[in-house]
Length: 435
Image 1 (cartoon, rainbow, N blue to C red):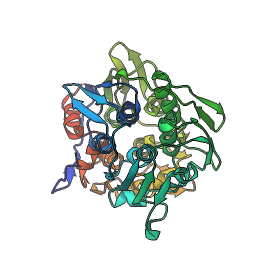
Image 2: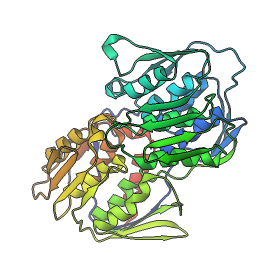
Image 3: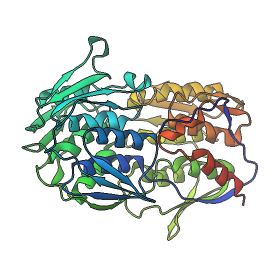
Image 4: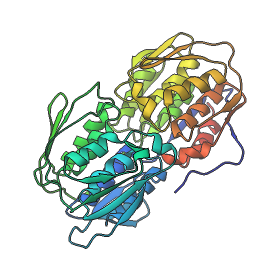
């Protein structure tokens, strides 16, 4: 699946009355792609219930198919038959697109593939940091070759005998927690398992590592955190079975934000009572910004009156929440500061520069700090061409801004297909339900 290309900018709809809607979101990208990897490595078949179907998940399925896994699509599920390591392996090529999970999760699996695997991706993906993955594989005895002109980036080729001894490994994962998760997901298939230690600056997005450990444990793998920045995965079986994918709570952000901007209420159906998804933090964040949140048998319901408070917050736990928070801050009545997100400079785009540029293009008052954003209220907000930078979260941020500011024209809203192909339909449903 590729992003739908809109020939004309998408004019973000404005809203003039409170909304009252219930939204059922597609499955979590983070959980779907972790479970796809584990299903490919498992000892028996796995049925994934309500997985995300999007560009990122399709890229992961294509990558794992190249490595030997098989996928049977059903109405609301996918049956995954694991990689058969006894079959002869061929040289394969994997397109990572712009999916960080494919870029960082698939290369360790390529180290378990007897043959060569070439990795490449979108032009924007070639700007994303990959040195930690490359250096990790080399330290584990896997050959990685790449052109001198792309050192530490895509493209590169992994060549292996089909096994990795494992043992102890130190890495610097300060640019992305995905470097840790990618190694941990494959580590049960290493001969000696893996003891992995992060040495470097602050490690971002720790909840994503907790999610990885939780996924491993639920499949019977002995995986644990042994120190502040050290994790151990024992070698052993990875169970198949039936796995239900939770709705994507990070993608809930724009819909919850809509109630913050318009007033009224939005219910996200089937919000889990307990989860490792970083999007669960929206409850506390948006409460600080003026919302009221209730959980019940329907899911999570956010109610607001349209008046938004500024916030001073460290978002190092999950920088993917920053675009929603930043746009709400631009619409708030008081100042905001978002810190702990310097690593967003290495995401799908430099999200700090992109958010600053687009908020200011719309008449806002946003400036970059060393590790985040400082945002002041503005009385001069106006319509503009809002660039998406091929970044799904920048596109949805423009949709939020457009709820209050007429004339926001989002360039390539189709980039939301990366994690939510049905975004524009869900957005129309949301705004069609007035209080």
